[in-house]
Image 1 (tube, one colour):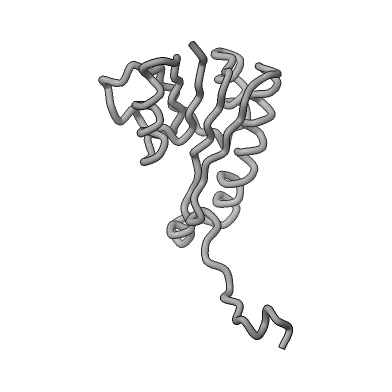
Image 2 (cartoon, one colour):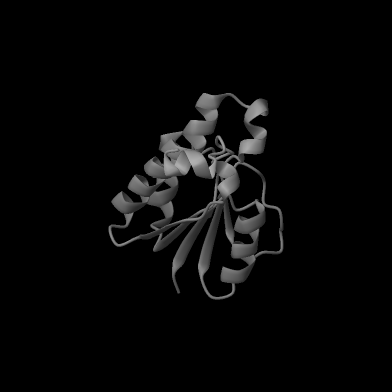
Length: 133
C-alpha cells in the first residue's frame, strides 16, 4: 500500500482521484476546503500550500510515496484574484511542494496534473505570422 498525496483534493479531478485511489492506498487529501465527502476513507489535511511551512509539515508527517498535484487556479478566475496570487499558486506552490515531498521522501514520485485553463488564453497567431509572412 502506497501513501498518496492529492493536492486540490476537493476539486473535480482531485476528488475523483481520492475516491478511485482510496480503496487500495493510504490517501492524504490536501486542500484549502473542508473534505467534500465524509465517507471517503482518506486522511484530510486542510492547508494553504502558499504557506511553504504547511507543505513541509504535511510531508514530514506523512512521508508520501506519490504526490499527485492537482491544485491550481483556473485563468477564468484571474479577475477575482490578483496576478501575484495566481502565479504563486500555479507556479511557486508546485515547486515548493515538490521540494518538500522530495526532502521527506527522496524516492517520491511527483505527478503534476493540470488543464490548459490554468494557463489562460494567449494571443492568437495567424498562419501568416507562423510562416513569417
